[in-house]
Length: 451
Image: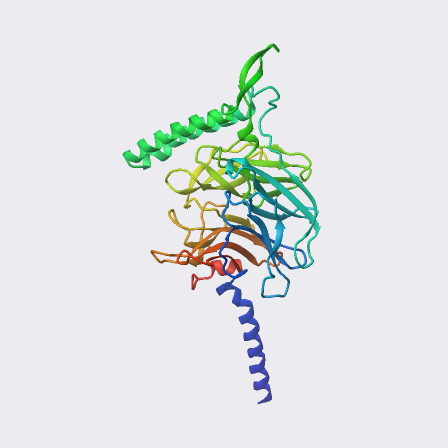
């Protein structure tokens, strides 16, 4: 009898232990970080700290680019705690909107915060900034050690005006030429005739606009035209204001060895570019512009063969799909963006490479709205996404809650952390917050409830 009781006890202990181990495969934990707000709260970012804390940031204020009170706010989920701290200030250029924070840890375990200030209440006047901290594991906001602006200078020198053989002009022309061929061969044949005509008309306008801005023709001034033989003559030339300002942040960078590759985008140029530093911000160089489909807000991964892959938000015309561009020279040059089969409603998304080597993407699984949020996993470097599960899924036809603009990471224990804007469209007051979800990769793969 004693042996039977002992055996039953062991079975009970095993069952309890096994139940705890299995729980992550079939569950997800979600909570709002702070009570619903009247202010606009959006654009979250998240980082797991070495001490086990999870740090979040977002922008908050009366609006976005037009509201001078917008600042970067943050909150901390301390290790072992179940409730987030009271929000605290992370950055604020007083009198200017501060937008789209992005955080990460570098190879020296410094915490970086990147964002941009909007100089003249237009996206085209954005100025990227960063600060980093060594002391960031105490309660409250990190103690920042350094802050700097990133003065973006793609292309060649323009001391006396943009020259005809400028590298940025050449890069833009190459992208536009190659994308036009792709457009006519692959995209247009799949569209109805009336949409083809509309698309071609829009393409001609877009192409002319980008070519003109690349040449700086919106800022024409007296300059010096340099000839091939070294002769110099007076000329009216363009100056590179549009490609020096207006660069914006959204998703975290990719670190390859000692190289930091930061995705930027420009609403003025309708394009993406990658800022690259090999000395942690002391010096920067820039990739070619990625043009054609108005793809922005890149989310990056690296393939086993060293190819860099970047998925882009589709800010262009239909079909509404995530776009994909690739680099085979460590981020310096990128291919034209081509449509994937992943739907995108012109909403931001994010991805992370898991410890297993698999890719996990969090996005709105729709061409039209931001009312659902999906976690999807690929084990073949994005060729297919075999597992998919809803984090949020509001199927109401009217007043559906927006769950969008996610940020995703995986900590060193294997837990996945997602932050996203959570906006109730069926309320007029106190209707916005940032929501937090945590789960395992097994939860995404586990068959069962999808929400």
